[in-house]
Image 1: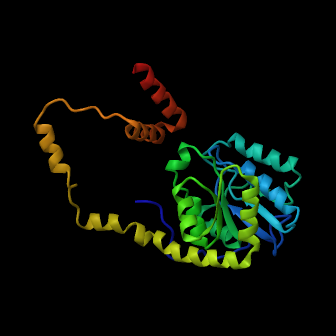
Image 2: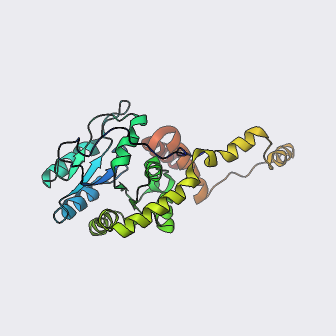
Length: 273
């Protein structure tokens, strides 16, 4: 089953960011990066766009929720993002990094204080196969969002009017999108209404329904018997090949061994070929 969101929206039980983090006021416009900073994301364009927009929107605040993880060594992109924000003169004024681990059950307090959510990435293979759970958190919290094009959630955001989709590494487009979701009140309100509607498609009860139905009445796949018949006939099976097969194999290797492992496996196959 895919990931889902709780039926009940998040409940704000404590102040977490606004009026708590030094430099972020209770009435500031808060754009949240709801998750970790990893090498397959692209925060540099986002930081540059916020730095430009903050020059005319002094109450704009970008908050990176996750820079620390108890089980994952900090990636270089975290330090690069810190350094970029510092060099642009916006670290601690318009761009903020949360340097403590946020418990899963506590994330609702951060999301509930945000005015919009953001996720920016590069256009590559990871994007094509990604399913970004931070976008589910934005849906759960009812947030309009700004996302980079190229994955299934970007298509959903665009088709359902949940916010703004931008090209990768386009600072001007990203600046305009952030300005729209945070400062165009009519657009933001319409996006929130659409988010609330679409959110119902992702609640656990709905996304788990096919699995629950199968567990209640399990049955063999329609092609299971045919597969046995094919094997009983004997003969040499045709080896699969082609672009689709290669993509499936690369995705399998990536899932099993990570990106570097997948590259090694593919390189090995090419040498043998």
